[in-house]
Every structure is written in structure tokens, then in C-alpha cells.
Length: 215
Length: 231
Image 1: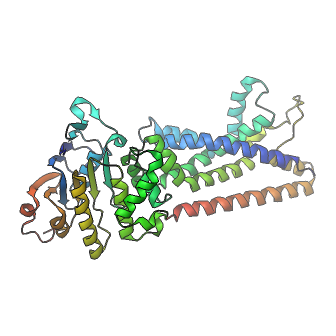
Image 2: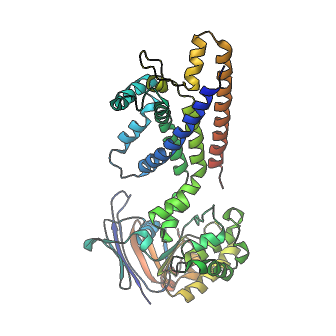
Image 3: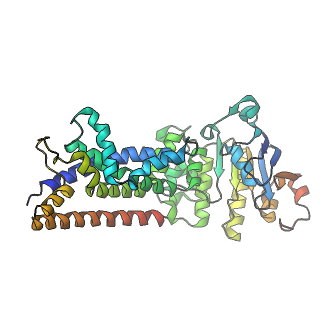
């Protein structure tokens, strides 16, 4: 039994959470813009990872990243990218809930008080959407931590002939231990990742509730 | 002393076409009308929060909107004060920070002092470091007025600001607004349903019905014989 896969998962989920929060907040703001051309289409594309089979997503990513040889596949970088893509739609949707919870009158008031759109965003919109953004970060982290399908296709080192020394993330390690008959190790990893995931979701739920009961 | 002159035509997306021509000298103009008569839309166009199909808005020689000439000054470049129906105080900021928010024309270091002075002037100096969730209705109203006035506005828009207050508080605030109007000497557009409020406040009254002006002129003349607006 080794905890290295869990540490690797925590590390990749943290990076994935930061990237998906930055990109996801930008996409959420873009999708809030009513005059965005083909807004529904952009929304559908951003949300696609929620409904596509993870293996299909993994295949697309693998095909796209494979252009760069093994720079972004079969390694930690690939695991981070896979986890980021998996968590992105969840982050976008949760940030949007946070943005939509900000009363339009507060934004209008800030504008009539002479604030530029950038100042309104920095001083009113984002601070008031804060609990939603924090919940998005937590959900994104939890989703990244639990990713299996996309990571398996993009970052698994089990392909014949690759031969790159690489530690699998927790989800893949747990599956390998289970298939290999090491049930104790599989169970321990399953319990720890479950506790982590549920704790994070609990925190996200508390933040989301705060968002709805604010004021 | 600059007068507000505006013409607004707006048909798209509305239940009825709005066609309004207003001239408001410094002082209080009450805009009255049933719900959905277009009162708030007029204010939104003046503030730049809504764009009409055709229109012109000018304060003296300062043109904010002239669609025929391609002029449409962004909201944040229009020097106005807008008190919203729900007040729209920023809940994450103290009263002082709310008031300082619009003080772009005041040097940064002077803003806290000026904001405190303004809050004290409106009788809510003790709330300076408190957040809006702890304010009573009347206190929130005074802080919202202080914030609006902190911009040194050329135009003041009040969208039913007293609608949620009880009678005694209304009377106090009506007196306060009259006093401020004398000091500011700018056009103040006050949307209200209350004939009693309009009698106390207004220098002139404009009545709207389905997007059209049905009566306008000196308050005494327009309000004569009216006991409640819906009659």
C-alpha cells in the first residue's frame, strides 16, 4: 500500500482546480454576456464533458495532445489536463450561479456611481459572487480528484511499449489494486478518497446555501 | 443652472410605445403614473441603462444622448445620482465605503472625511462603519441619498425611494429631500405613486399613461382635485 497516488491526485486536482477556476470564471463571464454570438452553442460545447462518456472525451484529448508526442500524454501533465477538462463545466456552471445571484440593481447602481465595467466587476460582481466562486473551486477540485475515465485514456501509463516510469493517480491506482487482487489497498484508497470527496462537497453545499440566504 | 431636456421614443420590446418629451428645470419634478406606465423606463433611459429607438438627453449644453448624431455617453460617464427602488446599497461595504464609491472627483485621501461629513449631514453619521444589513428602512434611505449626492450630480433620479417606508419616516425624508433640492439646484426627477408625497415635494408634475404624457405643469395645477393617483 502506498499513498503516493493519493498525493499525486491531490497535486493534479489542485492545479486542475486553479486552471479550471481561472478559465471557467472567464467562460462564465463570457456566457453571462447576452450579446455573445451563438451563446447557446458555446454553452453546449463548454457543458459537453458533463454528458459525453469520459472515454470519448479522453479519446478527443488524446488525439489533440498526441500531436505533441508524449509531452502531454502518459504523464502528470496529461493527468492535470484530463482532470481540468472534466471539472471545467462544473466550475463554469457553479460560477454562473454565483454571478446570477448578484442583484442586477447593484450592478446598475455601481455603473450610475461612475464605475467602469472593469471596476464594477472587481468591486461588486466578483466579491458578491464570492461564495459561488469558492463553491465552484471546491466542486472543481472534488471532480478533478475523482476523475477516472478521461485520465485513464490520456494519462495512464499502462499502454504497451511506452515504458515511462509514472505513478498513476488514486482513481487508477485503486482500480489496478482491485483488479490485481489487493483488496486491502483498494479499500483503503476508496475510503480515503470518499471521505475527501464528501467533505469537499459538504463545504461546497454550505457555501452555496450561504449564497442563497445572503442578506 | 442647467435644465434637463429630453425626448425619448421606445417601441421595441414594450407592451406600448413610449414617447415622452420633458423639460425639467432645477427643482423637483414628480413623475406619476400607474404601474407599467413607463416611469422607470424614462429614468433608465436618462441614466443610460436603457437605449431608446430614438432620443436625445441633455443637461444644459452637456449632451448625454443624441442617437441622430451617434452620441450615447456610457452610464459611468453621466454625472447623475440614481436612488433605486430597492436602494441597492452594496451589502459587502460599510455605509462610508458605499458613499465613497462614487467620489471619483474627490482626492482619495479626502474621501473618508467627506463621506463621514455627508453621512452626518443626513443624520446617519453613526452608521459610517456599519454594513447595510444592520440598517433600518429610514437609515438605509438616508445612506442611499448620501451615496447618490456624493457624486455632485447634475441630475438626480429617485425611483419610488420611499415606497417601503411608514408615514412618519416618509414625512421626515420628504422634508430632507426638499432641503437637499434647494442646496443642489439641479433637476431632480422623483417617481412616486403618492399624491400626498407629490404635493409636498413637487415643483412640477408629469403624469404618464401607457407611455404618453397626459398632463404636465406646475404641481398645484396638475394635482388639483386628485386624492389618490388611481382615481
